[in-house]
Length: 189
Image (cartoon, rainbow, N blue to C red):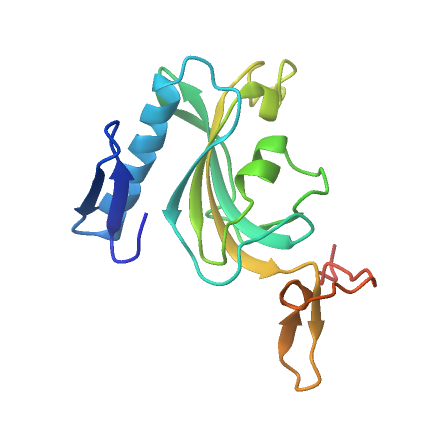
């Protein structure tokens, strides 16, 4: 995915292709279909498949960073998107999570690394990286592959501190990381 509704990819001969779409929605839909095709063509899905839909801006998130996300989750059924089992898109509350804290499924912990504020990503998560053999009663059958569309709305970097000029400075950009642990910046958690 590239800015201005472009997508670029390599074919099996390593030739580079670019496609320009008439709208952002067309580019996003194409990218989702590419990810689903990747999933359907792999003999065994043993890791999370990630496909960026929109790149976002700023620094990519890492473990320890706190995020607020909007998401929709589908069951992967009949080689495509099945029924929605969870979503907060039309709700007032975003999901708050701290990457690497183990509070969300392993597929999210891995699949969201590198996302940027305003970015949207499509994730296909195999059962071992989701709810496994137990599933979620009444919502996710055992051994289900799940598909998520996640959008990062807010980011709080783990190693953020305020500089003397009042501007936010990330210690990731400084040569020596600060040994002092910081709070995740979300006071209501």
